[in-house]
Every structure is written in structure tokens, then in C-alpha cells.
Length: 243
Image 1: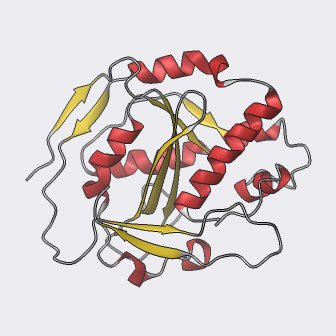
Image 2 (image 1 turned 120 degrees about the vertical axis):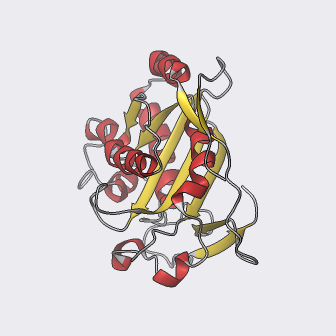
């Protein structure tokens, strides 16, 4: 069944807030490489958690730098393709400010993946925690996510996993807000603008027949934060039958 699509403006207040995104990819170029893992952490207007979505993806080719993202080729066997999770992603992104650490990079990969299936992502308000951190984490040894998380005293997290990075970015956002004494209410205009953006919607496709294989594969470590220097929990792959 082909993916059906239509434009829809979300109802005021129906899905307002922030979508903290992170992707792991097979390389650095959105044009030449593919997303191999995606995560979205949803926050309401007061930065309270509302839900999570994460899965490994079948990139239809080599997984790329395993030494960086620690995804082996066998890990994506049976994982969904991007087009199969695209409707779920759109449902979660619609009406929200897009947040990320160097968010323009995550946005570029997502936009290119959607473009491959004929969907043009609309321009939405962006919020970059790297930019926020630059002016308010003077003691950071750098402004990559790991350095910012350490400077903020947020503890260990499973770096270079999409869900771990998205959770850490959400925590860093909350830390920056507290440091700036700038409540989310001060960001009312981006929230209002995001809620009014017309987003495409996709009908959920009939899954490819793959008996016994999971719909989603989540990769995560036991919930942290964990202290620096200690033994860290191993990553676990969890097969999810639903959303």
C-alpha cells in the first residue's frame, strides 16, 4: 500500500512543546549516508517529559562507523526501514519546536530521509543546546554533547546512542534553562510558531511481511545518570512489538 499524505495544521494546544531529536548515521553526509538510528524525546511547554520514540533502522547497506556508534551490521537485521517509521516520526514532530545538540545536523539528516520518500519537511523553529551551552558553560572543555554534559555535572550517559544522546540533550536543555533563569514561558513565540506550521501526515503503511521480526528495535542502557569513572552498564537491544 503506498504511503498516503496530506497537509494538516495541528489544533492549537494539541501537541505543543519540544521534540528533542538525535540520529546516528552511516556517515557524515545527509546526501550520501543514511540514518541508522533515530530517537525523539517529547517535552511539554514546561520541559516535562511526555514520551519517547527510538529505534534502529535498516539503512539498506553498511552501517558505517561501528567504532563510533557501536551498531553492528547484525544489529539492524529485521529493523524497520525509515519509510516504515516515518508516519510515527511525523506524528511526534508535528506542532513542536525541534531541539538538538547541533540541531541543524539532525534536521538535515531527517529532511533528507523524508525527501527520499517524497516528503518535504516544513521550516520549523529550532533550539540548539550547543548554542545555549556556549554562553553558559564556561568551564566546558569543548561544546560537544559529552563535554557539555560533564561540565553541567549531569553524569554518565550512553554517548553515540540516539536515545542516550536525546535524553542527555533534554537534561542539558533543562540545565541551561535553570542556569539562565529563563523559564520556557519566555519561549512562547517559537512554541506558538511551531504549533501553527502545516506538517505533512502519512498514512501508516501495511508492514512488509516479516514473520517473527520486531516492529522496532530500541537500543539503550539502564537508566542513569551514572557517576564518572565507574563501571557503566552494557547496551541492550529490546524488540518492541508496538510503538
